[in-house]
Amino acid sequence: MTAIRPSEHSVEIESSAGAWSAGQLMVCAGPWTQRLLQTVGISLPLTMTSQTVCYFTYPDPSPPGMIQYGDSDPYALLSPARGLKAALHAPGPVVDPDDRLRPDGQAARHTAHWVRERFGDAVRGVRFRIETCVYTSTTDERFLIERHGPIIVVSACSGHGFQYAPETGRRAAALL
Image (tube, rainbow, N blue to C red):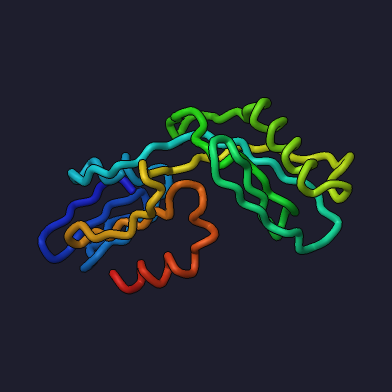
């Protein structure tokens, strides 16, 4: 998208693929939401951070999930394509989503230790894969599902949006 021009009852959108006019525009741009909408005067309370995520092979196709809340507590959930997904549920360093991100070795070691303590023999000796992702977070961990004239903003923030995808979709559709 190269330009957004909202008016009272419609919005014009320009992109590298062409230009459109519509009654409404739904923006679901993840960590780029804030930057994109600043161009039309919409200011959002978002912070983007780098998060280190670990994936463990797991012998059972449906590993149990576990979420703990507190300073630097990890979570573990099923990732159908990759096995057991685990990461710290704590803000990492603030980043620009266009920057190349590097995994945090200390966070990965902490997460691996936590997973091995809780899932025991099922993950002992198992190699794991590490990657980074960008969390888009609000200060109070709330999601953004809101209207700004003809623009609807949808950002399931703070690292747990994937858990609520069906409800987020229902609420976004209701606004639309």
